[in-house]
Image 1 (spheres, rainbow, N blue to C red):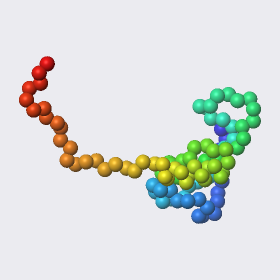
Image 2 (image 1 turned 90 degrees about the vertical axis):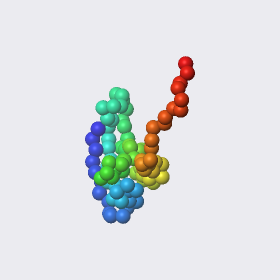
Image 3 (image 1 turned 60 degrees about the horizontal axis):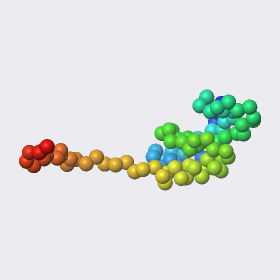
Image 4 (image 1 turned 180 degrees about the vertical axis):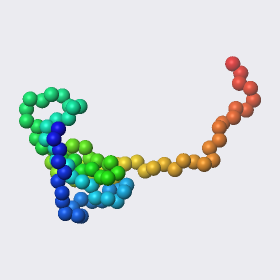
Length: 97
């Protein structure tokens, strides 16, 4: 796969929900080593990736990548706060078997 970064004016894409930075736009042609061999031409694909490593994955167009970037912030789970008062359960009496 051959990929290149395409620069855009600041403010083109919405900021990352995790680190508040603007994502970078990558365009690629060809296939990855994970994909099977294809003897047909593979169209150019687009990806938005942030400095914190959040990315959209390869999309068929820039518009699809922007849509996936917008959905990415909505679908990520919120970080859970670890409870501080967790204690092991203790059985009352003897276990009969």
